[in-house]
Length: 66
Image 1: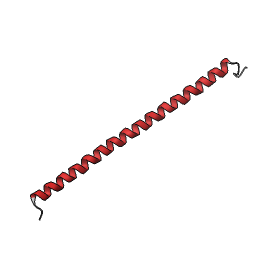
Image 2: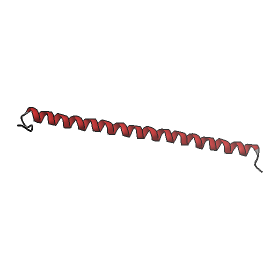
Image 3: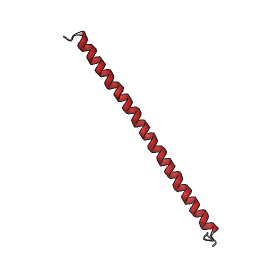
């Protein structure tokens, strides 16, 4: 039979484990959010570069009628 101190010790350890799991989940979500934001920024950058290249091509007479 477990003593009161042993039960309390186990409860404290379990609480620490649960807290650590919560922190890990939050960090994982933060990392995933950062990845998504980075991909979105990369996509906007590529789109801007593409639009810029089309724009410069048209203005230099290399368009479909050029």
